[in-house]
Amino acid sequence: MFHLLHTALAARVKGLTGFAAAEPAYWTGGYRPHVTLGTVVNAVEGELLTVNWITLVALEGRTGRRLSTVQLTPR
Image 1 (cartoon, one colour):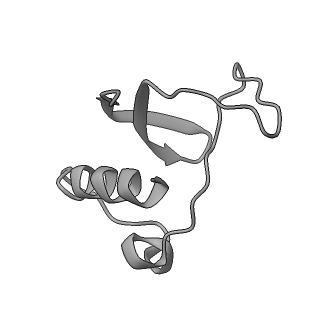
Image 2: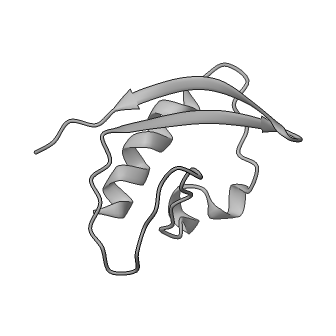
Image 3: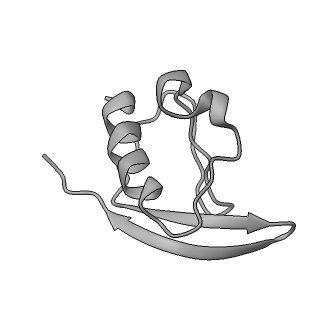
């Protein structure tokens, strides 16, 4: 499932103006499933969480610039 989500997001991100993968070795075929949670999310190991939205952010030092927000459609 994670690889399907990554492939869908990768296709969307590649279309953004100025996009360049920060770690090309881990992009598409080299993808390793992971998640980065914001500080307001408390996750306990083994707990199941539902993700409804994903925001793509360009990190420039300590500043983030929102590029796009993607709403995930539940199956």
